[in-house]
Length: 312
Image (cartoon, rainbow, N blue to C red; front, side, top):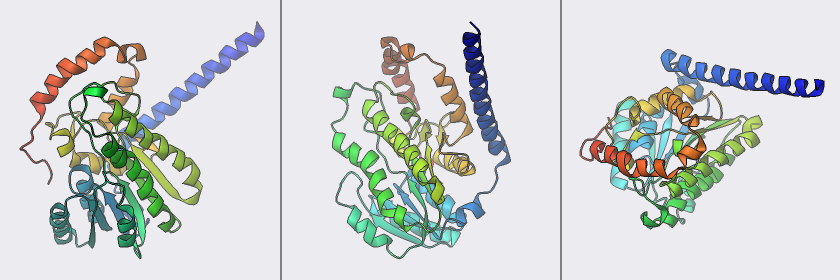
């Protein structure tokens, strides 16, 4: 009986400690959200150049501008050459930073030799693995989704691994890698099965690598945001939850030293805490799937804004 009491006491203390750690972590996000410390000196200490994949639009484009504003030269990698050229000219004009562009289609697997050649000789200290694709914004059953399985694997999974392999050996003493995953990676999302699974890989891969390379001065952080208004999400109307790419990127840079995983903004951290309270049996129920297929689908259709451009 005494041993049983000691066991339950130990479990109680353990639960309290875990809860305390979570509260301290959340308080840290709240503090950084309102304090907004400048990460400029930290980012510049990583090296002269930052590499951003998927830099032609949305989140990647905003990271390119923000890192250049913080004094780094940037390498922009994306599929559409005309977009890259326009963004490069704007960055050079507004920030004075040097810009290098590399055209690459990450849905293909034969692009990495060219990327490696174009990165030779650069003192790279930051990598933003941002490129990704969402086959269909509207929820759908796996067999009804667009047949883009191989393209999604190349874009969402292979790109993260291969770009990481190209750059990890080039870091001098320290470096920063930001891997952009998704809130859909935190637990399996029915009706977004391929996208959710691919982003879960990014999350798991990033945290495993952080454990391996943390002692070598390399910070690998995975970001798991929810709704961001970009071309991939058909420019959803921004609100208290749906952030513009500019809002998300600026806030996420405040949290680069907070650990190996975060949602990138306080609103999404709160949303993630709320979603964790939903029992798995409810989340994976037929009722919830019908909610996604009806009310949530209607919400998406009413709030997409494909003509408006939110990128400044």
